[in-house]
Image 1 (tube, helix red, strand yellow):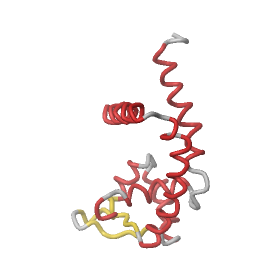
Image 2 (cartoon, rainbow, N blue to C red; image 1 turned 90 degrees about the vertical axis):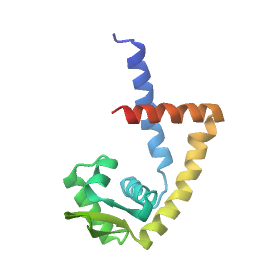
Image 3 (tube, helix red, strand yellow; image 1 turned 60 degrees about the horizontal axis):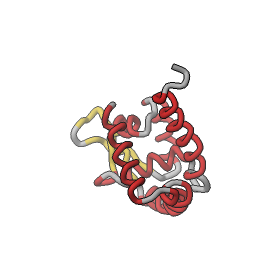
Image 4 (tube, helix red, strand yellow; image 1 turned 135 degrees about the horizontal axis):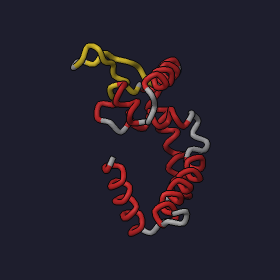
Length: 140
C-alpha cells in the first residue's frame, strides 16, 4: 500500500500545488487570501456574493472569514450590503478600490502563472489538466 499508484498520484498533486502556490502568489501587493476573495468577487456577475457562499468558496470557516472580511472592509476593498433575498444574510461586494487592487495583483499573478504553470504545458496538456481538475472539483 505504501507504494500504491493512487497514493503516489495524490502525493504528486499535493506537492505540485504546495510548490506552485507561493510562486504564483508572489509580489501580489496584497495577502494571497485577500487576492482569492477579490478574484472570486471579480469573476462573479455583479461582483457580489453572499458572505457564507464566499467563505465556502475560499475554504474558510465562517468565523475566520468574518475576521478576514472585516480587515478587507477596513482596507476599503469590499463592503457588506444586505442581501435583498434574505434579510438575515449579507453580501460581500467588490469596491472600486478592490477592483484596482485586483487588477494590480492579477498582472503579477498572470506573469507568474505563465512562467510556472501554463508556460510549462502544451496546449493539449493544459486542456487535459483543466478537464481533470474540473472532474475532481465537481466530484465532491
